[in-house]
Image (cartoon, rainbow, N blue to C red; front, side):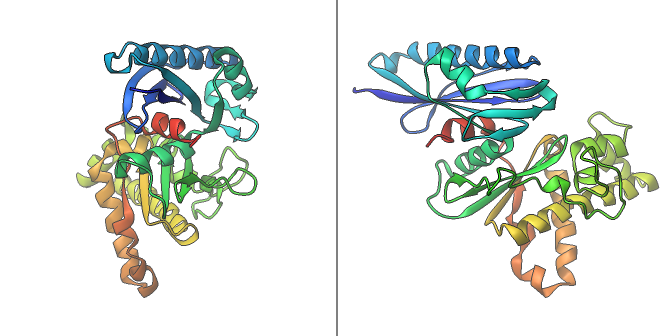
Length: 310
């Protein structure tokens, strides 16, 4: 057996860091998870620690006792990411204001390092997980309903960054009619009703909030029904905007809100179909059939990070 090339991928989240090692055929050889620590030095130290542990686990595999070449390390991380420079800005949940992440990690691992926004790599990983490999053609979007709302777009197997690296920041489109104040300084941003953070604020009665909100609405709670209509309406506004601007063949729903599962998906599809009833144009797009939950059987963020240097 000749040289075996292995790629590493690490997804840095607000509460956990997940890592995978991908083999020559993109098979997962090793994976691990640790808790996230805040601060730039902790972020770097923990990425390096996960990378080193993954390398050790791959080396211990009996079928890879021959030459192993660790070829790259991809990192997905929240915040504003300059993927060309490998710099992370304003990752608030990690207490990182500015971090030259690619250079810091490369200097300690010796590996080529590529840094991407976490939603972008999740989109790439979702495509891989759903298709057992990257398609050569087509456009796929991943809508992340987490603390905020963001979209990752993959075109022809590659991440679409846009001209200024802000493609997918859909949560700050200020079109929501209730006009709630947003942390960005605007009012009526989509994420003020469609995000996990918004659900927690609008329905502070359950933990997690979204399943409790749905259950209360199903019991006939008037206030819950009003809040649920607002949230589902906002999510469907996000989906409609993505459908009409990106025109993807598939849209994955991910993030904390998506953990509600099929109950949430049914509500979303019902609302999308209701909108299509009064619009032949929307009906022709069959948007509800293109929406599905993101794959949950693997860390799509870590897998996507590993694939991001392809």
